[in-house]
Image (cartoon, rainbow, N blue to C red; front, side, top):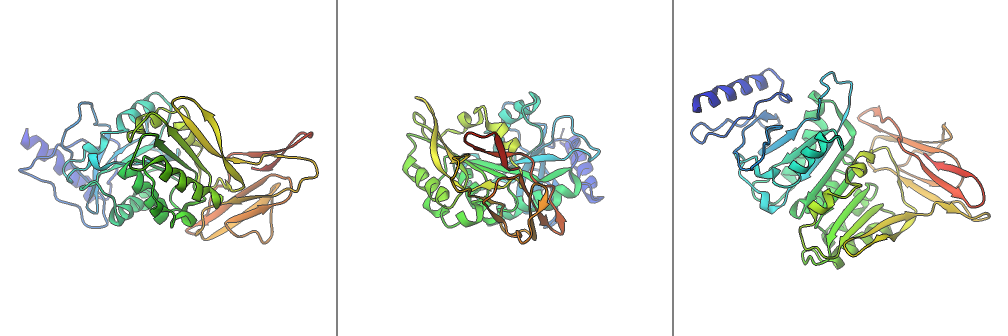
Length: 381
Protein backbone atom coordinates (compact mmCIF):
# COMPACT_ATOMS: atom_id res chain seq x y z
CA UNK A 1 0.00 0.00 0.00
CA UNK A 2 2.82 2.37 0.84
CA UNK A 3 4.28 2.09 -2.65
CA UNK A 4 0.90 2.82 -4.26
CA UNK A 5 0.43 5.96 -2.19
CA UNK A 6 3.93 7.09 -3.01
CA UNK A 7 3.19 6.75 -6.72
CA UNK A 8 -0.06 8.68 -6.38
CA UNK A 9 1.70 11.50 -4.56
CA UNK A 10 4.43 11.61 -7.17
CA UNK A 11 1.74 12.06 -9.83
CA UNK A 12 0.23 14.88 -7.84
CA UNK A 13 3.58 16.62 -7.59
CA UNK A 14 4.11 16.25 -11.32
CA UNK A 15 0.80 18.04 -11.94
CA UNK A 16 1.98 20.92 -9.75
CA UNK A 17 5.27 21.09 -11.58
CA UNK A 18 3.56 21.94 -14.89
CA UNK A 19 1.61 24.76 -13.31
CA UNK A 20 -1.77 23.15 -12.63
CA UNK A 21 -2.38 23.10 -8.87
CA UNK A 22 -6.16 22.98 -8.37
CA UNK A 23 -8.08 20.15 -10.00
CA UNK A 24 -11.47 18.84 -8.87
CA UNK A 25 -10.27 15.36 -9.78
CA UNK A 26 -7.24 15.51 -7.50
CA UNK A 27 -6.80 12.23 -5.59
CA UNK A 28 -6.79 12.09 -1.82
CA UNK A 29 -3.36 11.04 -0.58
CA UNK A 30 -2.94 9.59 2.92
CA UNK A 31 -0.04 10.83 4.99
CA UNK A 32 2.81 8.34 5.25
CA UNK A 33 5.15 9.30 8.14
CA UNK A 34 7.92 7.21 6.56
CA UNK A 35 7.63 9.14 3.32
CA UNK A 36 6.42 12.66 4.17
CA UNK A 37 5.65 15.03 1.31
CA UNK A 38 7.90 17.90 0.38
CA UNK A 39 6.44 21.33 1.03
CA UNK A 40 5.95 23.43 -2.09
CA UNK A 41 8.12 26.56 -2.48
CA UNK A 42 7.07 29.67 -0.59
CA UNK A 43 4.42 31.61 -2.48
CA UNK A 44 3.26 28.56 -4.42
CA UNK A 45 0.30 26.35 -3.48
CA UNK A 46 0.75 22.62 -3.83
CA UNK A 47 -1.09 19.35 -3.53
CA UNK A 48 -0.93 17.81 -0.08
CA UNK A 49 -1.93 14.94 2.19
CA UNK A 50 -4.40 14.16 4.95
CA UNK A 51 -4.51 11.83 7.94
CA UNK A 52 -7.87 10.08 8.06
CA UNK A 53 -9.55 10.94 11.38
CA UNK A 54 -13.25 11.46 10.78
CA UNK A 55 -15.92 8.77 10.44
CA UNK A 56 -17.40 10.08 7.20
CA UNK A 57 -16.11 10.27 3.65
CA UNK A 58 -14.24 13.56 3.26
CA UNK A 59 -12.75 12.72 -0.14
CA UNK A 60 -14.64 15.52 -1.89
CA UNK A 61 -12.54 17.98 0.12
CA UNK A 62 -9.25 17.99 -1.77
CA UNK A 63 -6.00 18.44 0.16
CA UNK A 64 -3.57 21.32 -0.48
CA UNK A 65 -0.81 23.32 1.18
CA UNK A 66 0.29 26.94 0.99
CA UNK A 67 2.93 28.93 2.90
CA UNK A 68 2.96 26.71 5.97
CA UNK A 69 -0.81 26.14 6.01
CA UNK A 70 -2.56 22.92 5.08
CA UNK A 71 -6.13 23.30 3.85
CA UNK A 72 -9.00 21.41 2.29
CA UNK A 73 -11.03 22.66 -0.65
CA UNK A 74 -14.42 21.35 -1.67
CA UNK A 75 -15.34 22.08 -5.29
CA UNK A 76 -18.87 22.98 -6.41
CA UNK A 77 -21.28 20.18 -7.24
CA UNK A 78 -21.37 19.38 -10.97
CA UNK A 79 -18.41 21.69 -11.32
CA UNK A 80 -18.42 23.65 -14.59
CA UNK A 81 -14.82 23.47 -15.79
CA UNK A 82 -15.50 25.72 -18.80
CA UNK A 83 -15.04 28.85 -16.70
CA UNK A 84 -18.44 30.22 -17.76
CA UNK A 85 -19.88 29.86 -14.26
CA UNK A 86 -18.42 32.03 -11.52
CA UNK A 87 -18.77 30.49 -8.06
CA UNK A 88 -18.81 31.99 -4.56
CA UNK A 89 -16.29 30.94 -1.92
CA UNK A 90 -17.09 30.15 1.72
CA UNK A 91 -14.11 30.30 4.10
CA UNK A 92 -14.54 28.45 7.39
CA UNK A 93 -12.19 29.28 10.30
CA UNK A 94 -12.05 26.50 12.89
CA UNK A 95 -11.80 26.67 16.68
CA UNK A 96 -8.96 25.64 18.97
CA UNK A 97 -10.34 22.11 19.28
CA UNK A 98 -9.73 21.55 15.58
CA UNK A 99 -6.03 22.33 15.63
CA UNK A 100 -3.69 19.86 14.00
CA UNK A 101 -0.21 19.55 12.56
CA UNK A 102 0.27 20.18 8.87
CA UNK A 103 0.04 16.46 8.04
CA UNK A 104 -3.33 16.16 9.77
CA UNK A 105 -5.42 18.30 7.40
CA UNK A 106 -8.59 16.47 8.44
CA UNK A 107 -9.64 17.61 11.90
CA UNK A 108 -10.32 21.03 10.35
CA UNK A 109 -13.40 19.35 8.83
CA UNK A 110 -14.84 18.36 12.22
CA UNK A 111 -17.42 21.15 12.29
CA UNK A 112 -19.54 22.52 9.45
CA UNK A 113 -17.93 20.51 6.65
CA UNK A 114 -20.32 17.57 6.69
CA UNK A 115 -23.38 19.81 7.08
CA UNK A 116 -22.17 22.05 4.26
CA UNK A 117 -21.44 19.01 2.07
CA UNK A 118 -24.98 17.72 2.60
CA UNK A 119 -26.45 21.14 1.87
CA UNK A 120 -24.50 21.41 -1.37
CA UNK A 121 -25.72 17.99 -2.46
CA UNK A 122 -29.27 19.01 -1.53
CA UNK A 123 -29.00 22.09 -3.73
CA UNK A 124 -29.14 24.68 -0.94
CA UNK A 125 -25.81 26.18 -1.99
CA UNK A 126 -23.21 25.65 -4.66
CA UNK A 127 -19.72 27.05 -4.46
CA UNK A 128 -16.24 26.44 -3.10
CA UNK A 129 -15.70 25.55 0.57
CA UNK A 130 -12.26 26.43 1.96
CA UNK A 131 -11.22 24.92 5.33
CA UNK A 132 -7.76 26.07 6.49
CA UNK A 133 -5.90 24.08 9.16
CA UNK A 134 -4.43 25.87 12.19
CA UNK A 135 -1.51 24.04 13.72
CA UNK A 136 -1.91 25.53 17.22
CA UNK A 137 -5.59 26.49 17.37
CA UNK A 138 -4.93 30.20 17.00
CA UNK A 139 -5.02 32.33 13.88
CA UNK A 140 -2.55 35.12 13.19
CA UNK A 141 -1.33 37.37 10.42
CA UNK A 142 0.52 34.60 8.59
CA UNK A 143 -2.64 32.54 8.26
CA UNK A 144 -4.72 35.57 7.26
CA UNK A 145 -2.23 36.51 4.55
CA UNK A 146 -2.17 32.94 3.24
CA UNK A 147 -5.96 32.69 3.08
CA UNK A 148 -6.28 36.09 1.45
CA UNK A 149 -3.65 35.30 -1.18
CA UNK A 150 -5.35 32.00 -1.94
CA UNK A 151 -8.80 33.48 -2.59
CA UNK A 152 -7.66 36.67 -4.33
CA UNK A 153 -4.64 35.45 -6.33
CA UNK A 154 -3.93 31.73 -6.62
CA UNK A 155 -7.43 30.25 -6.77
CA UNK A 156 -8.80 32.86 -9.27
CA UNK A 157 -5.77 32.20 -11.50
CA UNK A 158 -6.98 28.63 -12.06
CA UNK A 159 -10.58 28.45 -10.86
CA UNK A 160 -13.76 30.37 -11.77
CA UNK A 161 -14.02 32.36 -8.54
CA UNK A 162 -16.41 35.30 -8.22
CA UNK A 163 -14.26 37.86 -6.37
CA UNK A 164 -17.34 39.75 -5.17
CA UNK A 165 -18.87 36.70 -3.45
CA UNK A 166 -16.25 35.59 -0.94
CA UNK A 167 -17.72 35.11 2.54
CA UNK A 168 -16.25 33.96 5.84
CA UNK A 169 -17.56 32.31 8.98
CA UNK A 170 -15.91 30.80 12.01
CA UNK A 171 -16.59 29.43 15.47
CA UNK A 172 -15.03 30.31 18.82
CA UNK A 173 -11.34 31.00 18.12
CA UNK A 174 -12.28 30.82 14.47
CA UNK A 175 -14.92 33.47 15.12
CA UNK A 176 -12.19 35.65 16.59
CA UNK A 177 -10.27 35.01 13.38
CA UNK A 178 -13.25 36.26 11.38
CA UNK A 179 -13.18 39.63 13.17
CA UNK A 180 -9.43 39.96 12.69
CA UNK A 181 -9.57 38.88 9.05
CA UNK A 182 -12.22 41.42 8.05
CA UNK A 183 -10.29 44.11 9.92
CA UNK A 184 -7.17 43.27 7.93
CA UNK A 185 -8.70 42.42 4.54
CA UNK A 186 -12.10 44.15 4.38
CA UNK A 187 -11.98 44.46 0.58
CA UNK A 188 -11.96 40.68 0.21
CA UNK A 189 -15.08 39.72 2.18
CA UNK A 190 -18.72 40.21 1.13
CA UNK A 191 -20.25 38.95 4.40
CA UNK A 192 -18.95 37.71 7.76
CA UNK A 193 -20.53 35.36 10.31
CA UNK A 194 -18.54 35.08 13.57
CA UNK A 195 -20.00 32.63 16.08
CA UNK A 196 -19.33 32.64 19.83
CA UNK A 197 -16.73 35.35 19.45
CA UNK A 198 -16.72 38.96 20.65
CA UNK A 199 -14.34 41.30 22.44
CA UNK A 200 -13.65 45.01 22.93
CA UNK A 201 -10.45 44.28 21.01
CA UNK A 202 -12.51 44.35 17.83
CA UNK A 203 -13.74 47.93 18.30
CA UNK A 204 -10.58 49.30 16.70
CA UNK A 205 -11.27 47.56 13.40
CA UNK A 206 -14.88 48.78 13.04
CA UNK A 207 -14.01 51.65 10.64
CA UNK A 208 -12.46 49.06 8.31
CA UNK A 209 -15.26 46.48 8.36
CA UNK A 210 -18.40 48.53 9.06
CA UNK A 211 -19.50 48.30 5.41
CA UNK A 212 -19.52 44.47 5.50
CA UNK A 213 -22.84 42.74 6.36
CA UNK A 214 -22.31 40.72 9.56
CA UNK A 215 -24.26 38.08 11.47
CA UNK A 216 -23.04 37.37 15.01
CA UNK A 217 -24.47 34.47 17.05
CA UNK A 218 -24.22 34.17 20.84
CA UNK A 219 -25.21 31.64 23.51
CA UNK A 220 -27.19 33.15 26.36
CA UNK A 221 -25.29 31.02 28.88
CA UNK A 222 -21.87 31.49 27.31
CA UNK A 223 -19.23 33.06 29.53
CA UNK A 224 -16.53 33.52 26.91
CA UNK A 225 -17.83 35.76 25.47
CA UNK A 226 -20.77 36.82 27.59
CA UNK A 227 -23.95 38.21 25.99
CA UNK A 228 -23.01 41.58 27.50
CA UNK A 229 -19.68 41.57 25.64
CA UNK A 230 -21.30 40.61 22.34
CA UNK A 231 -24.08 43.15 22.64
CA UNK A 232 -21.58 45.90 23.45
CA UNK A 233 -19.66 45.08 20.27
CA UNK A 234 -22.88 45.06 18.25
CA UNK A 235 -23.85 48.47 19.65
CA UNK A 236 -20.46 49.90 18.72
CA UNK A 237 -20.92 48.70 15.15
CA UNK A 238 -24.49 49.99 14.89
CA UNK A 239 -23.47 53.39 16.25
CA UNK A 240 -21.37 54.02 13.12
CA UNK A 241 -23.94 52.65 10.69
CA UNK A 242 -22.75 49.05 10.50
CA UNK A 243 -25.40 46.63 9.29
CA UNK A 244 -25.29 43.65 11.64
CA UNK A 245 -27.66 40.86 12.61
CA UNK A 246 -27.32 39.55 16.16
CA UNK A 247 -28.88 36.22 17.15
CA UNK A 248 -28.97 35.09 20.77
CA UNK A 249 -29.84 31.53 21.78
CA UNK A 250 -30.86 32.03 25.44
CA UNK A 251 -30.56 28.38 26.48
CA UNK A 252 -27.27 27.67 24.73
CA UNK A 253 -23.72 27.86 26.01
CA UNK A 254 -20.63 28.31 23.87
CA UNK A 255 -21.42 25.81 21.12
CA UNK A 256 -24.06 27.63 19.07
CA UNK A 257 -22.61 26.95 15.62
CA UNK A 258 -24.66 23.88 14.69
CA UNK A 259 -27.81 25.80 15.57
CA UNK A 260 -26.59 28.70 13.47
CA UNK A 261 -25.85 26.44 10.49
CA UNK A 262 -29.44 25.17 10.70
CA UNK A 263 -30.96 28.63 10.58
CA UNK A 264 -33.34 28.80 7.61
CA UNK A 265 -31.61 31.97 6.39
CA UNK A 266 -28.04 30.69 6.73
CA UNK A 267 -27.46 29.86 3.08
CA UNK A 268 -29.77 32.55 1.66
CA UNK A 269 -27.83 35.12 3.73
CA UNK A 270 -24.57 33.96 2.18
CA UNK A 271 -26.11 33.80 -1.29
CA UNK A 272 -27.29 37.43 -1.01
CA UNK A 273 -23.81 38.63 -0.10
CA UNK A 274 -22.17 40.60 -2.86
CA UNK A 275 -19.38 43.14 -2.57
CA UNK A 276 -21.15 45.65 -4.81
CA UNK A 277 -24.30 45.74 -2.67
CA UNK A 278 -24.01 48.92 -0.57
CA UNK A 279 -24.76 48.73 3.13
CA UNK A 280 -27.66 50.94 4.15
CA UNK A 281 -26.17 52.83 7.07
CA UNK A 282 -29.27 54.67 8.33
CA UNK A 283 -31.21 52.80 11.01
CA UNK A 284 -31.11 51.30 14.48
CA UNK A 285 -30.88 47.91 16.13
CA UNK A 286 -34.26 46.37 16.78
CA UNK A 287 -35.64 43.07 18.10
CA UNK A 288 -37.35 41.52 15.08
CA UNK A 289 -38.07 38.00 16.36
CA UNK A 290 -38.24 36.35 19.78
CA UNK A 291 -39.06 32.95 21.22
CA UNK A 292 -37.98 30.83 24.17
CA UNK A 293 -35.01 29.51 22.17
CA UNK A 294 -34.02 32.42 19.94
CA UNK A 295 -33.84 36.20 19.85
CA UNK A 296 -32.96 38.03 16.65
CA UNK A 297 -31.85 41.64 16.51
CA UNK A 298 -31.31 43.39 13.20
CA UNK A 299 -30.21 46.75 11.92
CA UNK A 300 -33.66 48.12 11.08
CA UNK A 301 -33.60 50.75 8.36
CA UNK A 302 -36.15 53.50 7.94
CA UNK A 303 -38.02 52.33 4.86
CA UNK A 304 -41.19 54.40 5.25
CA UNK A 305 -41.15 58.17 4.94
CA UNK A 306 -44.15 60.27 5.93
CA UNK A 307 -45.30 63.08 3.61
CA UNK A 308 -43.36 66.22 4.42
CA UNK A 309 -40.56 64.38 6.20
CA UNK A 310 -37.06 65.00 4.86
CA UNK A 311 -35.53 62.22 2.80
CA UNK A 312 -32.16 61.13 4.09
CA UNK A 313 -30.19 57.92 3.99
CA UNK A 314 -26.59 56.90 3.62
CA UNK A 315 -25.19 54.06 1.54
CA UNK A 316 -21.70 52.68 1.85
CA UNK A 317 -19.26 50.34 0.16
CA UNK A 318 -15.99 49.11 1.62
CA UNK A 319 -13.30 51.78 1.52
CA UNK A 320 -9.94 51.36 -0.20
CA UNK A 321 -10.83 50.42 -3.79
CA UNK A 322 -9.27 52.31 -6.70
CA UNK A 323 -12.39 54.33 -7.59
CA UNK A 324 -16.17 54.50 -7.03
CA UNK A 325 -19.12 55.46 -9.20
CA UNK A 326 -22.72 56.02 -8.10
CA UNK A 327 -25.78 56.37 -10.30
CA UNK A 328 -29.34 57.61 -9.77
CA UNK A 329 -31.96 56.27 -12.17
CA UNK A 330 -29.19 54.99 -14.40
CA UNK A 331 -27.40 58.34 -14.63
CA UNK A 332 -23.95 58.82 -13.15
CA UNK A 333 -23.98 61.24 -10.20
CA UNK A 334 -21.28 63.77 -10.91
CA UNK A 335 -18.87 64.21 -8.02
CA UNK A 336 -20.08 61.05 -6.22
CA UNK A 337 -16.72 59.29 -6.15
CA UNK A 338 -16.45 58.31 -2.49
CA UNK A 339 -17.26 54.93 -0.95
CA UNK A 340 -20.27 56.50 0.81
CA UNK A 341 -23.25 58.36 -0.63
CA UNK A 342 -25.82 60.54 1.16
CA UNK A 343 -29.34 60.23 -0.31
CA UNK A 344 -31.87 63.08 -0.23
CA UNK A 345 -34.05 62.27 -3.24
CA UNK A 346 -36.26 59.38 -4.26
CA UNK A 347 -34.86 57.35 -7.13
CA UNK A 348 -33.13 54.13 -8.08
CA UNK A 349 -29.49 54.05 -6.99
CA UNK A 350 -26.67 51.68 -7.78
CA UNK A 351 -22.91 51.71 -7.49
CA UNK A 352 -19.73 50.06 -8.61
CA UNK A 353 -16.04 50.22 -7.71
CA UNK A 354 -12.74 49.67 -9.47
CA UNK A 355 -10.49 46.85 -8.35
CA UNK A 356 -7.04 46.44 -9.88
CA UNK A 357 -8.02 48.61 -12.85
CA UNK A 358 -11.32 46.84 -13.57
CA UNK A 359 -14.83 47.99 -12.70
CA UNK A 360 -17.05 45.68 -10.68
CA UNK A 361 -20.34 44.44 -12.10
CA UNK A 362 -22.64 46.68 -10.04
CA UNK A 363 -25.44 46.19 -7.54
CA UNK A 364 -27.53 43.01 -7.75
CA UNK A 365 -30.49 43.42 -5.41
CA UNK A 366 -33.01 46.18 -4.80
CA UNK A 367 -33.62 48.04 -1.60
CA UNK A 368 -36.80 50.09 -1.67
CA UNK A 369 -38.27 52.91 0.38
CA UNK A 370 -42.01 53.47 0.73
CA UNK A 371 -43.55 56.86 1.18
CA UNK A 372 -46.73 56.51 3.29
CA UNK A 373 -49.92 56.99 1.36
CA UNK A 374 -48.21 56.75 -2.02
CA UNK A 375 -47.15 53.85 -4.26
CA UNK A 376 -43.78 52.28 -3.57
CA UNK A 377 -40.98 54.47 -4.83
CA UNK A 378 -37.61 52.75 -5.19
CA UNK A 379 -34.78 54.90 -3.91
CA UNK A 380 -32.07 52.28 -3.78
CA UNK A 381 -31.24 49.54 -6.20
